[in-house]
Image 1 (cartoon, rainbow, N blue to C red):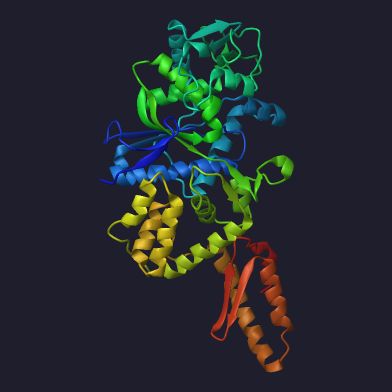
Image 2 (cartoon, one colour; image 1 turned 90 degrees about the vertical axis):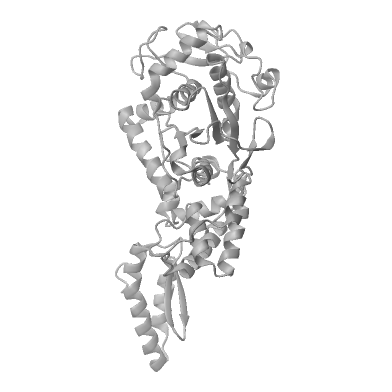
Length: 459
């Protein structure tokens, strides 16, 4: 069996992955808070751990992997969105959850085995909080319940920082009901206009951190194999998850391997609305950039390193994938197995850049069936018909224009007047179409910037 190695954030070294139970490999990944469209940082995490999921399924078998990714559907950001729009919270969370699933599907992300909503596990959260109070790790105060950080000596081990350093470097909420500045909220009171549930401490709602602990325990047990998420969650979210989970269930170890993906930049700068470089997955899809192109750009950078999204990378990725699609046109069967070089690359801490270099080698050597098989493992090409790429919208729009350009060129060859040819080419290029003209004929290739609306009435 393939030996997998992961860089374990908790131990700060690459380790051989040895699941607790090879017949049920278990992974939990922190999912989105559903109040708006998924941005590119959300997408990078989803794609990174989708690769891990695909690798685990390949090595251990699809029926022997349990992947849980949650939806946070109770949160102050959601409450604010509801207040701003006047829409019911349930409508907002249902809509944005489906948006997320649709956008991730466009990127080739498989749906996890379990996708729990936080509001479905309020009872389990209350039970865990009661357990923490009973064991002296939490206390009730003014309708709140707080976790006592000093009651857990290993707090900070994941991020490698001391509690004193965390206090000095973090924005710590100062509240009169806290015994210590680092104590964090497990339960908080709700006013009549906010979502709330009955509890021993009054009507209220859970804090963010307790959600994942309760859902992971309920669905994966007191100890499971892998916990993943963006490195921005390492502190305080993951530190708090570990503390409350290990204190509530000291007989378990919570997660054994911690994987964190690095952050994303855009054109060399941190993505932010103030810089005007903040965009969602849906924005890119609406611009005509195929989901597989977005995914391919992500995979060119190791998940554990910062990545820079650029328009040039997207253009280059589209060209590479189009070339491979053309090479695979007519390939109807897969290789008997994924090339070992590709599997070994992914087994080395999800080294997708190395895996992609192997794909280029397979393409150069004409090993088409192996290339197609390897692409499928990486989540690319699953909807290519017989290995070929067909953009239905572009195909239907461009075929008559291709004929029109051929006729215009034929006429121009006789009249020596190429103005109509130049006009058609200008409009096509402006609409995001690459015009390839040769003695053999004319080929129109839609680029990621293709906009069919600019071609209306042209033919």
